[in-house]
Image (cartoon, rainbow, N blue to C red; front, top):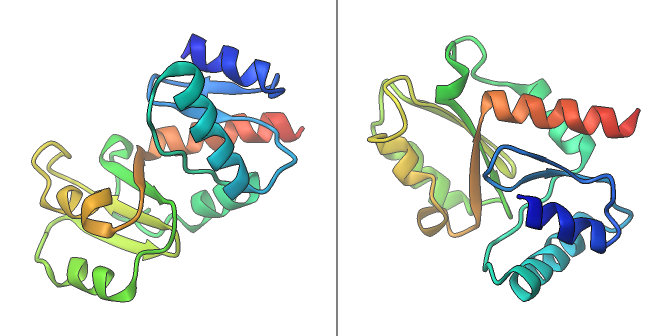
Length: 161
């Protein structure tokens, strides 16, 4: 993460903050999110030698994700409650296929470019989690637990202040 922070500083994102070791970054940028994602993917690959997809949300989009919180009434353990941030909205047929699979007691809510998922028995052997992958959805998906999502919004709020 130190290398990533250094790269971001070199690119002019001196206010960039990272959270945990999974590539969570909060920064201020004056470019559209899709352009920022492409720029960061290229720079990370070229300078750090790591091929990775980058999914970007604006402060407003992240705040809307937290405000929606559609599983708040059932997701009582935040480490088992995840939001998958998607590079694009999956097609309707794909999501209908996910919805057709019996994953009870797990639950999910699809909302645009996010999927909220509750894994009460854990994520390791979750049938639902296996359906919410890049390969299955046809779009890049990166999941974060609810605690991380809320902390990212707090960091973004600090940058906005």
